[in-house]
Image 1 (cartoon, helix red, strand yellow):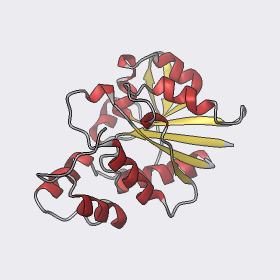
Image 2 (cartoon, rainbow, N blue to C red; image 1 turned 90 degrees about the vertical axis):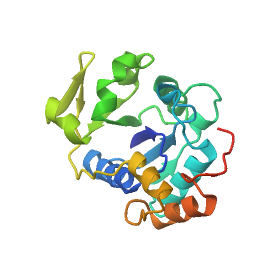
Image 3 (cartoon, rainbow, N blue to C red; image 1 turned 135 degrees about the horizontal axis):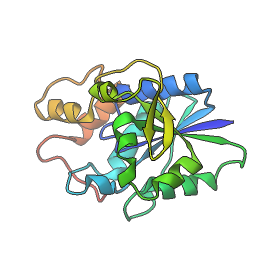
Image 4 (cartoon, rainbow, N blue to C red; image 1 turned 135 degrees about the vertical axis):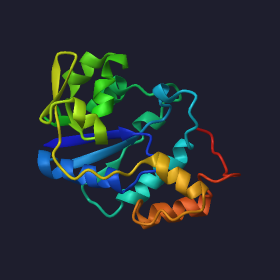
Amino acid sequence: MAVGVFGGTFDPVHMGHLVLAETAADELGLDRVVFMPAGNPYLKAGTEVSAAEHRMAMVKAAIESNPRFEASTIELEDPGPSYTIESLGRLRTELPDDEQVYLLLGVDSVLEMPRWRCPEGIFDRAQVIAYPRGRMMDSVCQDFVSVLGRKAPVLEGPLLGISGTDIRRRVSRGQSVRYLVPDRVAEYIRRNRLYSSGAPKLPA
C-alpha cells in the first residue's frame, strides 16, 4: 500500500493541484492521495491566507468525485504553526506500519527544505517527490532535486501554469476562473464572496 501526502495552503485548490495529484497516483502507483491543507503556515507569516474552514471546504468540493483522493484535517486541528515533520508523524500513527508514504512537494519547496523544522527527519519519514514548478526546473536536474545530501525524484507529468495568486487576482477583478478551478470550487468562491473586497472572514 502507498499513500501520497499533498500539503499546501490550497487558497484555492485548483486544476493544477488535481492534475498533479492524479499524475502522482498513476506514476507512483498510489492507492490514495491525501490533501492536507495547512492550518497556520509559518513560512507565510504576514501573508493573508483565507480561513482554514474555507480552504478545507473547497478541497472537499474539488476531490469529492475521485475515490483515490481524500482530505485530512491533521494540520487544522493544531492552532499553532504547521510543521511538516509533525504532520507526517501524526499521519504515520494512523497508517499501517508497512504503508509507504510519499510527500509531494514543488521543486521550489524542496530547495527551501533546509529552512524547515527537522528537514532530515522528513526524508526519514517519507519519500520526497518533487514536481515541476515552471522556471525552477531550469536550475535543477530533470531527474531529481538534490538537497541536504538527499535526492527527491522529479515527477513526470503535465505542467499547468495555474497559480492561486492569479486566481485570487482574477476573482478580485471580477474575471472568470472557469477551467482554472472545478465548477464546485468556483461556486463556493462566488457564494462566500472570497477574494473580493468585503469577503467574510472565519477564524483561522
